[in-house]
Length: 122
Image (cartoon, rainbow, N blue to C red):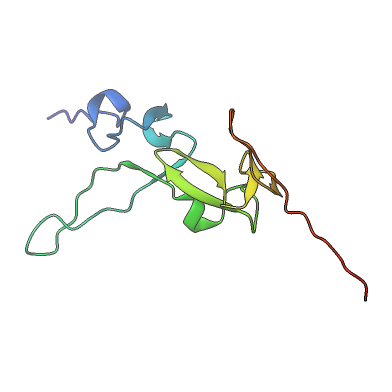
């Protein structure tokens, strides 16, 4: 009797399933790689008996919650996006979200008057 062992590779498995990553063949095996901004998920329960799925998926990293963003630390808001994040300056600040300065942007056709002060000496 002859036993044939089929090598584990990307073409012969369904364990590395993700549209945000890829499967890479290694010597006699394979590994799952995720795109930047994504990480491999842990196996999840799939049944009432607490069995787990053996497939692996790439899930979005929440850079904002994990502190992996480069938004201004006190004057910007970080918003997680699929595979990345966006920064926006908070009200009262202007800039691109990475660099924010006190002030506001004056819109076209908007007049901005600075208050005037009068001092009287008696």
